[in-house]
Amino acid sequence: MNRGSLRALLRLLAVQGAWSYERMTGIGMGYAAEPLLEDLQASDPARHAAAAVRSAGFFNSHPYLAGIALGALVRAEYDQVPANQLERLRAALPSPLGALGDQLFWVGLVPSVMSLIMLGLAAGVGWWVLPAGLLGFNLFRIATGVWGLHTGLRSGAQVGAAIGDSWLPRWTPRFGRMALLLVGAALPVVAAVELGGATTVARWTAGASGLAVLGLSWRLETRFSPLRLSVLALMMAIVLVGVWP
Image (cartoon, rainbow, N blue to C red; front, side):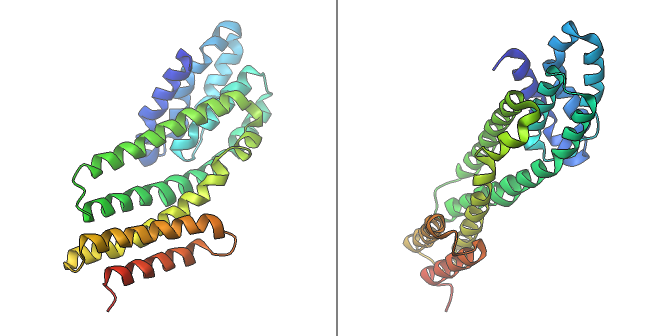
């Protein structure tokens, strides 16, 4: 990663919180694009001025995947893509990136991490599972940001095809299934601990049952919906823990 890309990534990470709560994604995109457009300023000042204005235009998408759009739009500026095509590209990216980001992070990763933390606490692993979960989530978020920025810079106006050929659309639904199953495993375990009716062996067995059904989902995903799998995991965990009379 060159110096400009690193500065752009750090700016993306710095403003992601503001994007989430203030819907300031357009201004954040312009701020993060500035280091990447420095070479354009030296070679084509007029194009740089127009690119700087375009980069700060309205853009409302998932903040953790916005780096894909940032890299693609900057690369398109260097490739001298016409302004009308740039605007169409900028208008086309928010919806798919927003949908994929919501499914990957809010529907999949966040509930999965929270469920693993609950299972760890219920099993008596220790308080360290809390910072471990937070660290794991943020490492994944940063890694996704690095990948997204590189993908956009490499693909430019062809970023749609690059996203379609990547891991993102294939693995995003699997994160959703994982969340359903882990939540299904965690709920009865936590309930049993709160009620004081489960031994350590029973708690681990309940969690293992959810993970077992998770593995089954990869083999039978065309025949069983995520909802059915999550209900199956929940029922297995409840029976094993003994919450169900």
